[in-house]
Amino acid sequence: MLGGRSRLNPEVGPELTEPETLRSEDGALQVRLEAVAGRLRIAGREATAYGYNGGVPGPTLRLRPGDRLQIQLVNRLDAPTNLHVHGLHVSPEGNGDNVFITVAPGESFDYDYRLPEDHPPGVFWYHPHHHGTVADQLFGGLYGAIVVEDVDALPVARERVLVVSDISLDAAGRLRQPSTMERMMGREGELVLLNGQVRPILTARPGERERWRVVNACTSRYVRLRLDGQQLDLLGIDSGRHAQPRRVEEIVLAAGNRADLLVTTAAGTGTLQALGVDRGGMGGMMGGSVSGDVGPLATLEVAGAEAAAPGPVPQQRLRDLRGVEVAERRRLTFDMGMGGGMGGGMGPGGMSFTIDGREFDPHRVDQAVLVGAVEEWVIANTSPMAHPMHLHVWPMQIVAEGGRLLDDVRWQDVVNIPAGGEVTVRVAFDDFSGRTVYHCHILDHEDNGMMGIVEAGRQ
Ligand SMILES: [Cu+2]
Image (cartoon, rainbow, N blue to C red; front, side, top):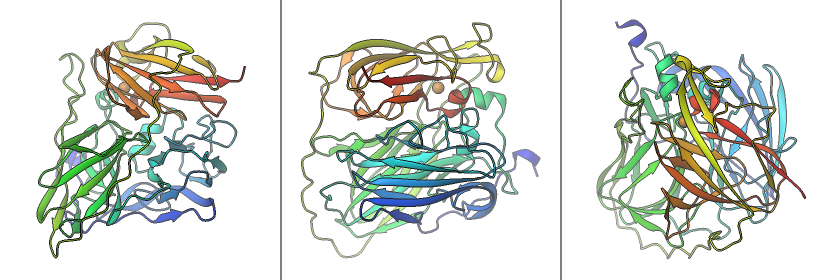
């Protein structure tokens, strides 16, 4: 045995299972979510990890625009936690999507979210957001998917929710703690899971159109997904949509991104591959931080009688902020540095993780915006690693990458900012006032200070 380095021997190749689905009725969904630490089933084995309601992932919540979602979060962990509904356009105040709430061990909190009638459809997710322990709690198994359904359903044979996550478990199934270096780079788990399973099998008939809602719930890992031999059409990333589904060979998801995909099946066996993404490193000084090839994530077996051709996908209506007046322009700079600096250097290995030279301060408002304003933010990255920038509550329209204007409409709530690069986004601060955050979705970076506060106020 190799002691601490020996790993859980996963069960490989079971049939794909999906978490329990909890669906709204008559415009409302009430859910009790218990965050539990203990014995759970992961990769077909007993593990000692975290989960919501005893499962990894937690239940899938299915909503419609205009719904009210009430979640009673019960904390059965031995540390404080809370809940973030990633990507939902809901109020950040009070008992809404308020990341400043602390739910102590043994206590509970009642969240109450109201989705606007025009809330975009798509796939979203939930996970803890208690500053300082986000990476630990998410890596341990605390996440689940949220689907906001289309007003006009798309014609598909079936839908699947596919949550990609990673975790490191020792041979006894216990969580392995990350090293200082891993926290600096952003920890990546040794096991990459699909709905908590290793290389599950999916079955379909030829000619069927399936809808895959893929969530990258990894703590830091980026994934590049391919499904050779099958037809992939991308509806969009996060809550974004293309006017028409776009034929793709592969998709890249940074930590926190989701893909809404159509798969049109052809007879044979397809392998869903998760390939590597170079997200930079520490300039050769301390080795790279590449999200390496995972290999097969799932197997799709397509056999049987040919299905009837599915109906057409309706044209999607897109909002475009490129032609509107911009009320304010800002520049935000993500950086990493060795030690020193103003209040810096407190992160792993003496490294500081900053936005505009400052680490997160829960008592400081970094960006004051007006409700209803459209702003343009240039997000720059002067560090040698990529950082996926996430803004809560309001989605971002990417208008330029590296100063080059885009010729299509792209809305995301996690935007990858390449090492040494910059991306320009426009944000419409619609509907809600209050304080919330933007941060790096490599959650070790967030926990170590790469986060700022935006406050939307009324004039
Ligand atoms: Cu980062």
